Image (cartoon, rainbow, N blue to C red; front, side):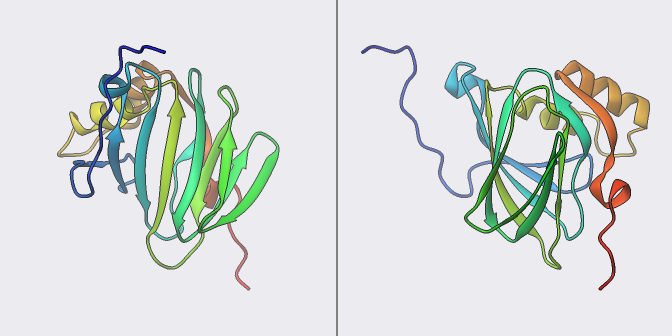
Length: 162
């Protein structure tokens, strides 16, 4: 079996930190260039009670593997609570979001197929430093085949104080 892809490795500490629109961190382990468009692998570090707005990927399926912490995920009509070592899956076209439900930063390994999800964070980084207005952010998101379709989980479904 032949392939035009070359084997490679990504070492700890190599990826550059990119800021997410929610102020968290994305570390792109590999993406479009290394995989010829087949997949993207990123580590996200999400602050307590934070996570992205409800959004839909028009091109990519997405797997979230919890490296550290505990998350809740909403994908379509399904809700999942996933702890360290577990994973959740969101197929392309399915509105989804997630939230770190712990009191410390938590880490997700995110794999998308095909690749391209990293471009949102790269394009967003090009707008920094400084404030990014919601219209500009929406334009960047749409340019990367993603649509915002609702608020963050902490807004749409706040955790009850127990």
